[in-house]
Image 1 (cartoon, helix red, strand yellow):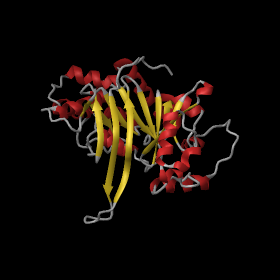
Image 2 (spheres, rainbow, N blue to C red):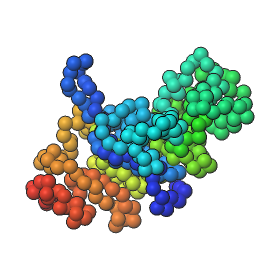
Image 3 (cartoon, rainbow, N blue to C red):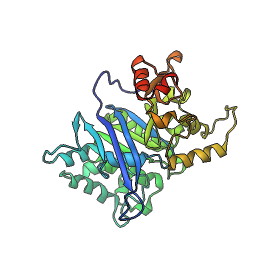
Image 4 (cartoon, helix red, strand yellow):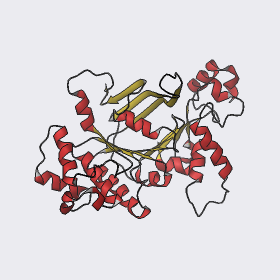
Length: 342
């Protein structure tokens, strides 16, 4: 797919070393579960970035941290190079929330059933100190493919796809620069999903909005996203151009995710037992389930570039691949001499 040129422009949003822990085991427990571990992610201007992974991998937690609904334990969230987690400027939080909006997974649960559609759009504008004229409301509702008369409808009077379009219109009301779409099609009928995906692409092309598209559906990520990042047990393990990554998946976890995508041309078998074992490893990630001699437990894998021979380069973090550069090899060797020949 063709995306707007970004040249060497700095990313719109950069995430560096983002870590998030949750307390488990009750009020007085000191036990913690690490949902995100040192995540680094760039979202360029006017691009759609897909974040894929199974349930429990940390996708929604990352989105909630970026939307400032959760406070990360450490790391940086840089909008135009400024760390929004550390800034003390007056009004900075509201400005950030105007620039970064979120669309939730359940369109019915995110809309108050006692209010009409008009209320949701007016409220979004008023919260951010803007007027809500009739012309602007009509423009918003028609932008997402709905008719003006639906401004007077209640959520229960709309279909699932229409409710999700209302949620998108509410996010667009404050002219965001980045929209975080947390599995926006997972609760919709298959027949209406393509409409939401096409709407996302049109918003990117017409308004230059960046989108972080969170999904477990790699087929839709391939269709709509410019780049795809794979999240496994709270860590990014592979990423790059969507077509390059899915044509030549390098990490075993990515390969297993793609094996679940229906493909009439696939010849290899499907192992449901292996998939069930892997999902248990994702939900309780004490060590890498792919390691055979404990290499991943001793050292952190570094990024390697793969696919250069095929003209489809992207990166992967896995000890199964030889470090791509002498610097990377020295890092591995210094951390663990036994890893020199990995």
